[in-house]
Length: 449
Ligand SMILES: [Cu+2]
Image: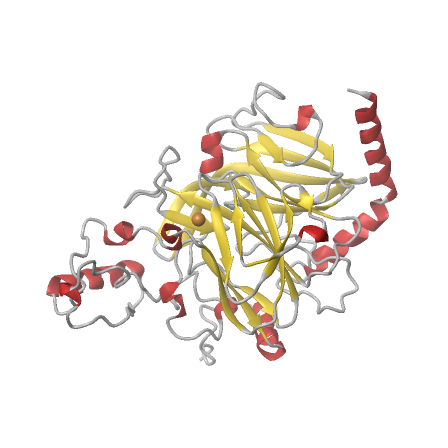
């Protein structure tokens, strides 16, 4: 180790010690406002982020549909536990996959620390094969780098390996098993390092979104990680319309952090607003580099962070703009009965739609009207029969979808979610629903009777 490098780590350690008090307070603040934290220390799940007059230097990152990873303290060191294991994930109302993940979640739970923190992460291997963990983008000593046979021996099934390092960076990082097929079957998660000096301007909402793609043959549940034909596209392990909308207050500043560890680059597009790209997998970008945009290309192994003022009320889509990534495999719904016609007077087509309806498990299958002469038009059908409303399906109906127009889910497919920019009254209504113990549905106002 060179002198400069040794000095660097010594300085980092001193820095961490000096800032420990601040760091702990930041984390206490973060945990008390964490919207989706599963930390037993967080007393208020689903509480709303504070309004812009917040006393906190930063709001915690919310990873929709993915929990946060709790930690304990050993002196000044934050201790995390990750268990690599098979995970069942219901990615859409009619599709459950057998992936691998951490602590029952795929992607794994989000780690949030503050720049300067010393962290210890105990990785338990409950997989049927060896694994290891790489801290993607973090400047850690080589023995913590997680590459099997180069920086460590693989972690055998049933054993636990401990990583420990100081996080001297800020930004959006991720952790993943350092083997290609294990990455592709889901072994990754977000690693957020909040800055010691708050970012300016202040963001009122901060969301993390993991982009993944899967090849799952009809009637199968195990992704084929060797395939290059992806038919299921997910944000945080869910396909639209199961993805939970991002609910933000009108007039607030919103930060979105995307990470991609798949086989394709995803151009992520936001409707109705311009954003600036404020960071990458290397941390915060200087403000002089920001320019207006509404599509950000999130390349493989990259993180991209964008920020925007939520100026316009409405339900604004956020999605990958690759056309095939805005849908999932229809083959899977139809199994061996492909629709050959969209003629609704064709009894076969109707029976197929009925089959579809049964397999989806909802009474109403919605599709847009088609023309009388549709079958005589070359190229027909394209999107007919691809629109299916599943507003009330399990995993789709939730407080965050409350108040959306009927059949809102008809056009929501694949790598897609929405940001709902809501005036105070509607925003507060959803926050209040989130604080209420959930019953089966939130739409009905008399479901207690
Ligand atoms: Cu894409």
